[in-house]
Image (cartoon, rainbow, N blue to C red; front, side, top):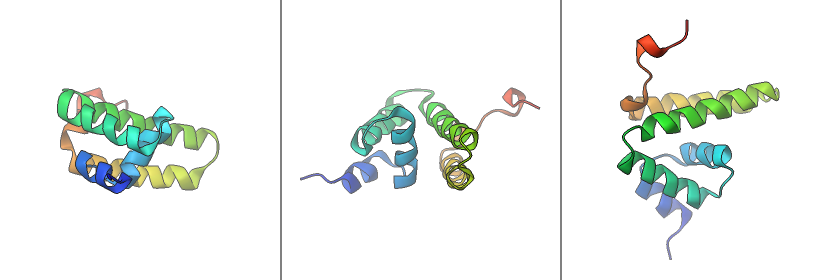
Length: 96
């Protein structure tokens, strides 16, 4: 039997990154792991889409006043961008 840990390991992301995708998409962790694998392997802009999901989760946490969760998600975002440099937003696209 394949466990959630197996699914997470196969997609190449951390459990925290998968949880952020699951939170954003309102799907179980297994489905989020499958989506992550698809985006990273088959979508030219998949890493950017995952980055945007995590950023959206951070914004929602801030909006509802959950600063602890926003802080945790920020660390997830930092790790994701460090390990997936293709997800980093180009300097010219950043808002000032």
